[in-house]
Length: 305
Ligand SMILES: Cc1cc2nc3c(=O)[nH]c(=O)nc-3n(C[C@H](O)[C@H](O)[C@H](O)COP(=O)(O)OP(=O)(O)OC[C@H]3O[C@@H](n4cnc5c(N)ncnc54)[C@H](O)[C@@H]3O)c2cc1C
Image 1 (cartoon, helix red, strand yellow):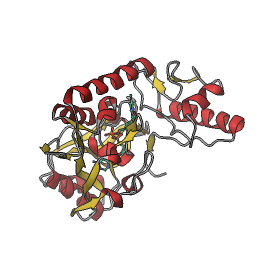
Image 2: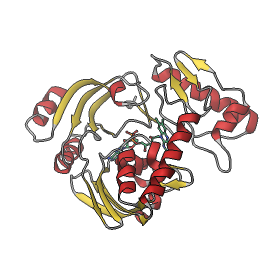
Image 3: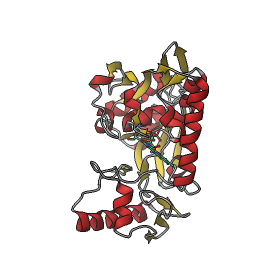
Image 4: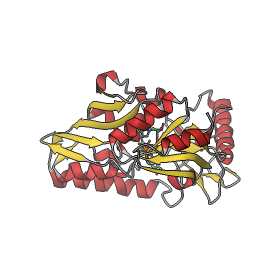
């Protein structure tokens, strides 16, 4: 089926806003990424499920973007459908210690909301950009806490457009990992979190401290995707990168931050290839010197070759 054919079918459905050849660099914190052939911004879960089942039925590539804060997207862009969440689907309902939130809610906003209600457990998320959906997929975490510590259930849409709910224990959460990271056909709609009652002022103070510490230690004035490599067991990736002398290394417009060695920053016009080559160079040097394999934390999206 040609793009023209499936697109004209798609345009007859109630699915939200459709954009053609949308530059993906405008949707990633790295400010890198070529055009999305078709980007759709659904407004509510039923529209999202319609898109997912349509893509499956017509065997179209489907990629999901939350805040785009953990992604490196090819300069050639992505064919098929890119489903953009984060602008919409932001309902939050608080009931005693439980929060039900839709996947498009920005994680820092949710953390602030929890703090205002005197609920503890999301303090770590104060400075982590992106959406709740992306944070579930990545099992985002910091300061010894991670999102899965608070998740009760996750509701997602399967490839047939059916809503399914699973308990956190079924979602294979571990360090920056989950079932959803390995099965990208499952699109997260909403999450139920269970937090603990605490003192609102103390929670807010803790969040402020975490944010201030990030401002001091991370190169937040440049586009990036946060930590580029995962920490190997019992090691800090930043320390290994610094130890091999990679701080300040630069390829094209991609540079290893002088402030935090596990950040690669975009100096202005970096390409995805600049970043990938730099990552490869760091990985090789760390392996040569320490026999440790650094694993990327950032996810690379490109068309199948
Ligand atoms: C300055 C900076 C600091 C950071 N600090 C941290 C940190 O301290 N700790 C940490 O863990 N991370 C950190 N990150 C990385 C990033 O913010 C997190 O991984 C974040 O949770 C990703 O959310 P997102 O919505 O941006 O996901 P995206 O980057 O958009 O997507 C990530 C993955 O999730 C998938 N996805 C997104 N939404 C959905 C959905 N609704 N359903 C199914 N799949 C979906 C995408 O397809 C992709 O596979 C940092 C990033 C930056 C730029």
